[in-house]
Amino acid sequence: MNIIHFDVDGELKKHLKGDTRTESLQSIDSSEGVSKVDAISIKTGSNADKSTLSPFTNLKLLVTRTVGTDHVDLEYCKMRGIEVKNILDYGAFNIAEHVFALLLTGTRNILSTQDEIKKGTFSFRGHLGIALKGKTLGVVGTGRIGLEVIKLAGAFGMKVIAYDVYKNDAAQKELKYEYVELEELAKRSDIVTLHAPLLESTRHMINASIIEVMKEGVILINTARGELIDTEALIANIGKFRWVGLDVLEGEKAFSKDHPLIHQANVVITPHLAFYSDESVKKIASETERLMNPFIKPII
Ligand code: NAD
Image (cartoon, rainbow, N blue to C red; front, side):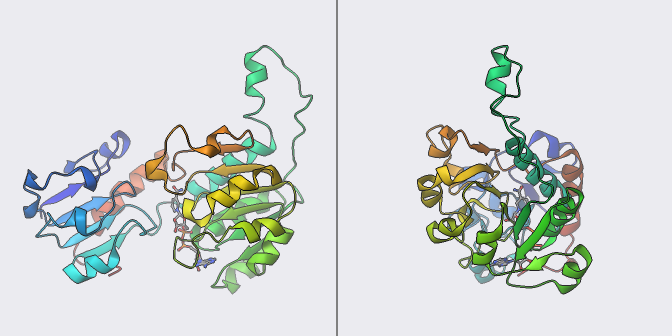
């Protein structure tokens, strides 16, 4: 089988065999002879749609090395008869750990103290932290990642409430959390963390009216997809938030140093790297190779 792996960084390259490229699908020149390619693997940097997939006239299989598939035009692939497979789980704990990295950076003033430290001031004054123990964590989406976050929250002694369109009764019993509607979650949570996929029904689920009912001083963490938050509404109400930790941004592919959120003192942004660890790169490589096997069932 003739395979090309796109969006491959140096770390993944150490584990992934074959033709690997750093470029995304958008950068491919149709004159490059890609018409002979049978299978490709990509990441969220690539938009897999009619314009990028047309030159791959022989393509039979597209593997996205991601959980989310919102960067793949599934309808177009179906129409072309291209099978699509995604990596369902390369270690949800990786993303859950990053949720707490973003959260603790804010609650324990890790970032805000650095300017003073660099100026030679070594003082706790003015940097009152927030204890997680006893606080209410609102988890939106109790799938693989949401449940890992709930497990870690248990270790911190937090109270957990959750919202999901599908209620996982077994997990609820085992991990002892409560399901509520989104608005109630917004009203009761000290911290809200997002773990739902990007769908038409979840786009801007955190919007002006949900922000309005949130507590003053609430903390918001998003490691799912940037489009779950209405960024304009977030910026308009940024003073309401004690802390915002974002691993994903709305329209992140067009990110620039002028992004209004990077100038907010109560916001920390990481570049969509929650998935990226020494453990996950090995798993992503082995799963990509496994999914290239024609006997593994596609999602379409
Ligand atoms: P999952 O499919 O296991 O869980 C998603 C959960 O969201 C499911 O329980 C589903 O019922 C729920 N859901 C669906 N629609 C909903 C709605 N309207 N409201 C509330 N909940 C809804 O997925 P996962 O593995 O837990 O991943 C969650 C998301 O995290 C992915 O879709 C992806 O976008 C994102 N992600 C980000 C990174 C990163 O590096 N930042 C890495 C992996 C995944």
